[in-house]
Image (cartoon, rainbow, N blue to C red; front, side, top):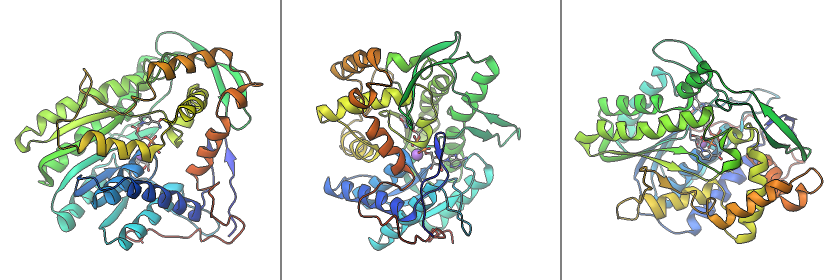
Length: 396
Ligand code: NAI
Ligand code: NA
């Protein structure tokens, strides 16, 4: 069928299989253009279908010829109804990996569940034996706790006081004031249960107990810090508490992996347009100002540039992994440069509906948002019939 974008708030109800394939191919070409990385050989990526997880998978496969097993939670297509973008991304990724002679299989289901963990372990045992890198890149608004059966929902709220600041509706470019009421303790606890480190530790425990982690294994999860303007709603808000927990969990996991010399790290990544970040108030305005300045300075990066740099210049340099005073890998270094942040801060103060398309990169934001769903790519025939029923080779 002919597939067009259908926007509803910060989500698009349709996805384009050929556009998603183009997105994956562009990312593969980028990684290849940067040359070989002496990186991981057998990789499990949890949250492998979009955003940083997909870019990590592509970097491992096409930067260092790694076999990859991807876990994600995507909707398959139905007649007349497209799949979610991560489905098509994964179909395209597997096709490209197989063409290159690389092992690539995927598991679609709830990564928080015991069942999906067990399926993953069984598949590693059957096909790979052990993995030497585990990427944990889930972003989810809900988590069904596997022990209690309780469904927890995360919230994006400030803590302590009502937060009032500017925000933008990136579809219309309207800059308005938004006020967000503070979270209560239950909100905070729920957000930590969903986006904190408990599930990462459960995964690592399960994989280690099953003997599928290689000697010297590395596991990485992703975090964010960001500037003062987003602090109340991000780093000092409910999601920030979850990131504090995730970061603390890295040390616990490292302890638990001592007998196999394994290490857990958190990498602090750059703010980028993904399905997860578009839903956070204030962040899209910050991102559109940040993009403008980082592009002007020639230091703008997308998920793939970030992950390629994480592998090539942090994780696999054949040297101790550089970290900050809290043990975190920093790949948000260019975003957080003083000169960049000073300029964003100045622009923030002046941003209005009238000037945003000029002082900010609203067009770039919108383009990236469309791209998430496979729209807006050169070389794709959007007027032609697309095969919305496309299957993922290892799942169908
Ligand atoms: P995303 O929304 O693009 O990717 C989320 C992934 O998790 C997808 O593969 C999805 O299928 C999978 N997933 C969600 N729920 C699942 C479930 N129940 N079971 C299995 N898979 C599930 O998100 P993004 O932005 O790539 O986020 C990944 C990590 O990076 C998160 O920890 C996020 O906080 C972090 N991060 C994001 C930044 C940003 O600006 N987008 C900046 C820095 C860190
Ligand atoms: Na991801």
